[in-house]
Figure (tube, rainbow, N blue to C red):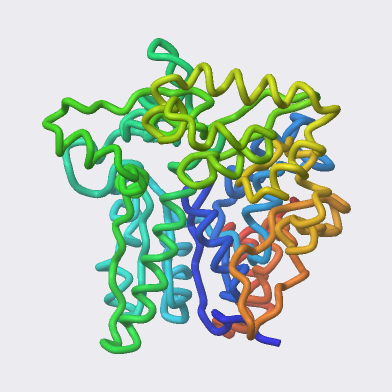
Length: 406
């Protein structure tokens, strides 16, 4: 059965994370994603490949996940012959994605204006750290740099002196996901206009867009309200945080009407109407005491699972703080396909995050596999561009395209 984006062809020039995550999702949704790789291969092929903690069977775990369902075509875009071959591909493509530094596509002659002259329907998407305009556009950016610029580190951590980064690279992931939204929007708009367009996606823009009330509070109070680090507890509601329990930790949200549910679960229903604890404001004013009360109650149980069962029976939003290893076998995550088991021909069997967009019309694709370097050279050059075997052999001989190993 076909997938939602079957028939959409993407030329993927992205590398590392802020970009490959978007094209990975496009591939998961059924688009034909062609990784146009340099002769040495996209950098994540060997990223941490020799580190046993971050590799599988000697291959970088980054690449195995982010390049699943993609095809690999190796072209040296720094050569005139390579660029001409790329231009031919553009004529048969819908989307070109990159996350080069600002100005690189123009320098290579593959910017939107140049490609739109070949294919007016082409959609180009460039994901950069700071965007293509503004005084910071040429700054070098990684996820942590954007987290710092975007204000995240000023509200993450245990105290005012020790800022922390997010455990996930949320800035890079956010840039990729908003790039994906932009691409799908441009595809929809093209159905009406018949023309493509360029998408200028700034990772910093995307990250900053995800602030909930922080920016509004600060600007609306002329800077008087400055969100600060609250550590393991939510800064403005109580109880809402992470609590120590026998054998692990539990997060629970016992504010608003759930305070009554929590009081019942703890066997102390009278606290729900006690003036010292009845309102969110009252509990927040003495949060340390509330936290101690909850943790003292939890200490009387044998383990986390028993506490979770009791809290859930009373309707209290809660969860055990799971390790990554524990998520791999969690019954709900496995049943939903949130955790997927794949069997790679080189790396063997391992788990990856499954496709989160589940539709009624299209089943999930069980074949998650990353390509070897240049694996699809002959297929794409032959079927897409109509090159003969002799012509493809000549392109390989000249170094315009290259076949390699994983």
